[in-house]
Image (cartoon, rainbow, N blue to C red; front, side, top):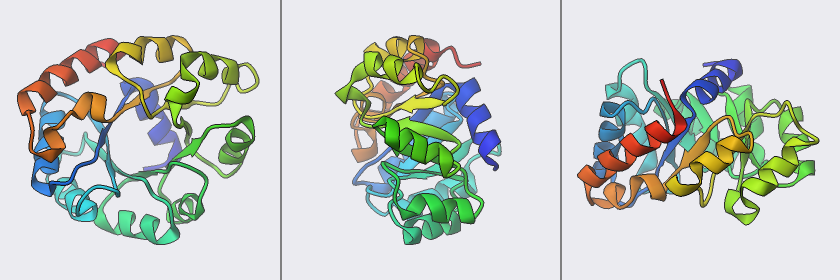
Length: 210
């Protein structure tokens, strides 16, 4: 996958599902439900239990239309391990060395940034899009303010984004939203998969994904 491919997916699908849990088997089941319900862009956070094994197994079993990334990529070692496990893109919470190593490896990056200075740095380093994180600090109004000086930067708010705020962020100019626990709930910890299905259907309806 190239950077423009990731940006195209974010722009068209508009939903990035973020899987993080302490039960690898449950995380895999959650990924299966996401795929069954039509989510095609997912991130498995490296802060979850045995995340690289989850990525490896999911990457080998999911269809070609589902794109799996590694999240919470902090270091160069994280980026290498993510690529080796089968991740096709990486997501970072900030502008650490994982950004540069992922790009060196040919993995597109959704790079975390919060301030205008960080947005400039993320785009200069070649990020496919900017992950506004943690988005809940400033909310949709902060995103709207950032887009005044950066109208061409593709922003993906993540962190504290709930189903009830998806519309506000998209109206403020986000190309997509990243949903973690408000979407996944307790499913990656062995919880309710039926509840996950209901939330996924609502989320896809909210973002208007094709």
